Amino acid sequence: MKIILFIFLLFSPLLIFGNMAEPWVLGSEQSTLYGAKNCHVSNEDIFIKLTNKDDFYFTKYKIKYSIYSDVDQTVPLLFIGIGLSERKLVTVNNSITQIKKYNSKNAAEISYSKDDVLPVNEDDLIYFDAKLIKGINTIYIEYDSYLEHNNQGFIRTYKLNYSLYPSKFWASFGTINIELFLGENLKITSSNIGEPRLEKGIAYFTINTIDKDKIELEITKKTNVISGLLIIMQPFGIATLFLVFMFAYHRKLLIENYKQKKLKQKSILFLGILIMPLMYYLVFFLSYPLIDFSLGQKNSKHGYIFLYIFTLPVVMLIYGLLMWIINHKLKLKYVK
Image (cartoon, rainbow, N blue to C red; front, top):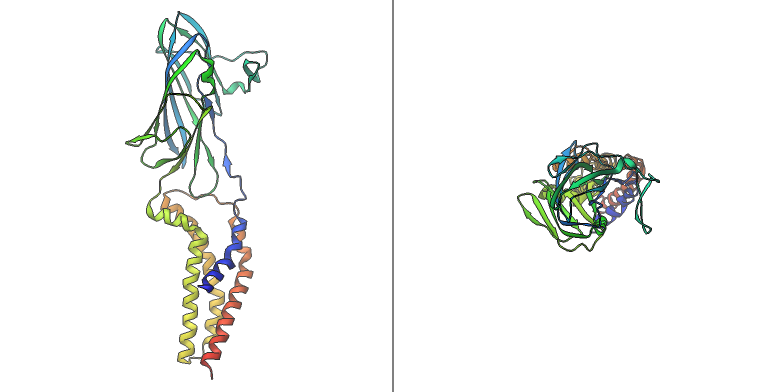
C-alpha cells in the first residue's frame, strides 16, 4: 500500500500542466419581450430545441406571447438577443412582421427609465411594430442561438441563459411555460427554476411567479456506466493504475529470477526501468481518445497535455531509483 501511495505521489505533479487553454466559449444571451405598460401578457410559451452540429449544440427558439390589449393599437416592441444567428422571424396574429432598425439618440443603449439603461449593439435587437387588436393577440418570435460552453474537458457543459427582467415593463405578466427538447443524449444538471417534469426527452418547466431576473440551465451529455467510470478515473488514474500493475509484474519478474538463479537480474531491472515509464506515458496519452470513443465524440480539448512528456526523465529517474532499492533488497535476500 505504501508503494502504491508513493507511485501516486510520484506522478501527481503531472497534473499542473492542464487547463491552460481558454476554458469557456461565450454563447448567446436573450430576453423576454420588452413591452408596453398598457398591455398584459397572459402567458409566454418558450419552445427550445437543442440541435447537434459538428459535436456542438445550438438552440432553436420559438417563443409565443399571448398579449391582451384593451384597444386596437400599434405598439413598438423590442426583443434583445446578443449573439443570435441571422435567422430571425416575427409574426403578429399570423402575419409576418418586418424587423426594423432600432433608431434612438444613442444607438449604443436602450433605456426604459433613468435607472434601466442597457448597452446594446444594433445587430442584437429585434425591433418591430406590433399591430394589436382589442382582445387577445398572438406573437411568435423564432431564432437560433449559440450556447455558452466549456472549451476543454471530456464532458461539455452548456449554459442556457434567458433573461426575465423585461417582464416588469408590461402592465402584467402571466405564466411562463417552457418546453426544452433534450432528446435521448442530453440531461439537465443544474436549474435555478426548479426541477422539470421529464417526458419522452422533453423537460417541462412552469413559472407562475417571476422572482428571478433570468433563467439559468446547465445541460450536459448523458454517459453510460463505462464512460462514466473512465471519466471518474481520468487519464491520470487509468495510467497510474496500469503502472501499479506493471510495477507489480516487474517486481515479480525480479523475484522469480533471483529464486531460479538465472542471473538475468540486470537485464530485467534496466529494461523495466526503460520500458515501464514509457508504457505509462503511452497509456496516459491513449486514454484521451479512449474516453472520447466511449462518449461517442471526436477529440476533445485538454490544454497543453503534450508538456507531460517533459517530465519523463524525472519519472524514469525516480522509478529507476525505486526499482534499484527493491533489487538491492532482493539481492541481499537471495544471493548468499
